[in-house]
Image (tube, rainbow, N blue to C red; front, side, top):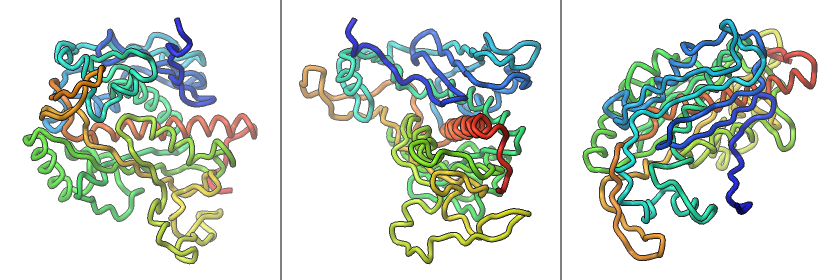
Length: 373
């Protein structure tokens, strides 16, 4: 055993800590959630809604791998409530087709982690994505469902939706006014029905062309109190960025006005402070709900760019592990667009970050922050 064979980095969070284990073509996945306070009503039924939004096979525009993704709660819940100890959740894989990957075990798939895994560990699980597979995200979605339930006790709501697919951009006048019903009204999870139809048509087109397409997911959190986040290395924006960038296929993160600030002047970009809702707020929200890495009480607004699915049935150039030129066409079932199934994954990571910082604020100050300071 060499030290470089150890794989750390399987946990996220400080006081609300999530650990995952498992690979896409192994027996299944394990999630451990530490730090959930005791007394929270919790059952499998609480986890299922978001897991069903994430699972494969839910519509014609996502991968057709058939997995029920039914969780089993093995620990941390007694008489229907959390008991304060580690919550253990098990998922069993059902529809692996490992034989689909036999032809590529010695070839590097473009856009995948095959080469980088070999470079780091000297070996890799060539069946699917191994540890980097998006199936790992069901662990995060389950943990995120618990986090959402805790946030709901404090009036915080986390919601995401598809903002863009390819060059098609949704018209969303007020991100905080979007409802879950609007998001779930179509299989692409875009609350703009006109642009959603165009997005679905585009996804169908690229699928028929044996190709894929990327896009943007926008995530919102309302009811977030002012005062969450640490002012230096653990800024709320920094933890959100790490959480979302840790998800498969995420290539970029921005919050508030994002990259638009590069062309703005300070007089245009600053949000004026005003008296608001019995406290202090801002007239606009170009800062995306965070200043100095600490929440202001305004809604959190952030976006992530998702790359096109790397696994393509059309031939692509590559090399073997020895560097010999080769051609590869990935068999198996893959999403022509990752965006529809990404939405609950993004929501989960935002919720986990917010709960973690709520608990850290409570531990530091002995109480939870007010909505407006």
